[in-house]
Structure formats: structure tokens, C-alpha cells
Image (cartoon, rainbow, N blue to C red):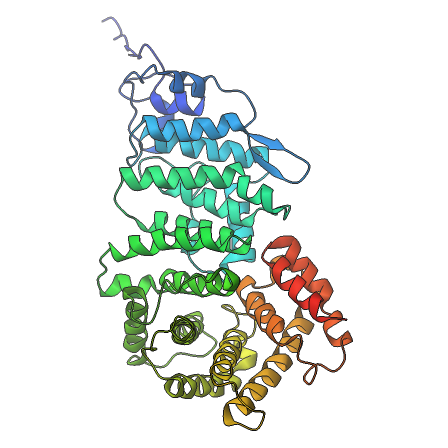
Length: 476
């Protein structure tokens, strides 16, 4: 009996996945070996023969250019990314999502990074004090993720992580014209038109706003964060989702407070006042957690709850200050806020060593807002040196100065990526207020010895330039 002949059927062209990735495809039917091994659908349908697809598949030019200051996308890559997003649909596993992911990995390769090393840099330099993204799940992503699960917003979140972890030159004009930044803004705008709101997109917008805030663009940061918060308002959460999302909801509020601090001269309004939906949802989560079994002060969840309390109190202070300066009767009295903030300071003082350097250092943050509150109250009343408000201001100035010295002393030998941006912003904002107080700071050398760390902070975050100039101007 003649042996049976095995017939191997092959497609006439490579599958879409292999074509996009520029991989060798064995064209087996019904699915090629690569797609079968990855457990993804193998698609042999012809791609549209538009010029954008042809230019993408034939692209061999570098995606990154290295200038005198830092790396950036090439103008060609910027055009390709935006054009690809405009020409195709943004769906789960779509050609646009695959292209963005492939481009992202090529960019990482050209700047000598991997997805794992990017996540590691992000965790060490950003995530400790701005836990906007849930890294625990994302760290399990392989270097070549399968497109079957890939959300359209996932590569945008990765691009945003790359934006905030990249060391920038500090030149204001370069920061605003950076192609990676401008491209991300454009891609997020396109994605908002094409897909439903999802958490990755909110987190990407928040990281872009962090970049803008830290690089001395408070107005742009305010507008970008407003979009992110509006997207949160469009979402609904069940009880479990509210609990698991506390870290990124609190991060949005932290960023709102930092934008207001960095944009004092620009009169940036508060986006998350005590009455807004986001603030109330965080408050509700804290009340719910308070009814559960007490946790160790050393636990991450307890530290997150503590900083949540602090940023909500900061919102009460800023809302009072902005209402007063705007000629509007504040919703809450000064005495009520002062009593609440004093109680919080008393609680934190007993745990200062536990919280120092973690989740933004709540002690440093709360004292900054104590000073802001007392400064505003004294300005309102034109207080005499013997008045109760003037004494409160003097006490808070002394406490803040002592805290600033200890904080800066502990950080003077630390690398700038090891320092919490949020904590340093609070320290420098406080220092810029009290730097001219000769009764408090009798020896200018006490301030001068901290100038090196201010300069290092300014090299990493352009917003430090404003604080550095204020402190320098106070010195003779």
C-alpha cells in the first residue's frame, strides 16, 4: 500500500503579525508557527496598501536622534506615530496598537533600554512617591507581549513612563518642544476620541501632567490633569474597585496640590477641592478602612491612608486660601481648619521616623500647609507681633525651618533620583517663604550649605529654578 502523502498548505503572503514585527513567517495554514506558539490569532488578510502602511513596513531609519542635550524622537517617527493613530482604528489587538508597541520597543532598543529596565527605573525614581500605576501586575509583562490582550492605551502608558524617567536638559524651550512630549499629547487626544475611558489612559495623562508640573509648566499641567480627572468622573466603581484604585486616585490629588504650589505666581486654581467627587470618594474609602482591623503603621496601605489624610487636609487649606484671596467666603472657617491640621501634626509627630521618605513624607507636606494657612491668616488680619495669629505663624515658621533643615541635611548626599519630588517641592516652597525671615535664620550660611542639593534638584526638575532663585535672592 502506498504511503500517504502529507500536504502542507501555505498562505501566499506573510501574516499580519509577522509583517508588522518584520519577522520571518513560515506562512502555514491555518496559522503560522510564531502565532500558534504565542496562542494568538494568525491573520493572513491583506493590509490596506496606504502610504502610511508602506512607509511603516519599509522603515529602516532611526527612530531616535541624539542632540547636544538629550535624546528625542525623530520628526519622521513623530509623524509616523501620529499618522498611524489617525489612519486606523484603536481596538484591542488592532494594527495601530501593534504598531505603537513595535515602535516603542524599537525606541527602547535605540536608547539601550528594555521594558524591564524601564519599569525598574520608574519604580526607583517615580513610583515611590507617585504611585499612579499598579506596577505589581505590569512587571509580569514580557519583553514581547502578545497582542491578544494588549489594550490600546497600554503603549501610551509605557511612553508616559519613559517621558518622566528620562533625564532632561532643563532648558525651558527644549522641554516644551520635546517631540516625545508633543507626540504623547497628540496620541492621547486621538485615543480619547476612539475608545472608552480606561485606567491606563488616565494614568498616562497623569504622568504627562507630572512632567509638565515638574518642568515648570503649571498651566499646561493644570489643563492635562483636568482632562484626567474628568475621565475619572465618567467612570463608575464598585466597592472592590474603589479599594484597589485608592493609590492612583490619591496620586491625582497629590499632583493637583503640587501643581498649585508650583504655580503660585500663575494663580492656578484647585482642581480637587474638598467638595469634588474625587476627594469625596477618597474620603469615603478612608472612612471605610477606618472601620476595619487596624493595620501596622509600617504597612504600605497604612502609609497610603496617612498621605491620603494629609492631601485632603491640604485641599481644605488651599480651598480656604484661594477663596479668601478671591473675595469669596470660605466654605470652612479658619478655626475649624486650624484645629484639624494641628491635630494631624500632633499625630504625625509621634510617627515621623516611620513615615520619613515614604509616600511623599507626610510630615514635610503637612507642615508646608500649616505655614501656608498661618501665612494667609496673618496677611488677612495684618497681625501685630503680640497677636495669637502672629504667634501661631512664628511657631509654624520655626517648626518648618527645623524640618527643612533636617530634611535637606538627610538628602544632601543622596542622588536626585532617590529624592521624592513631592517632598522636595514642599520643602522648597516652605523655604522660599521663610528664607527672608532674619529673626528665624540669623546665619545665611545655614541656607547656603543647602544650595548644592537645590541645584541638583533643579538639574532634574526645571521647577526647581523658581525656588532656587527665590532662595538666592534672600541671601545678601
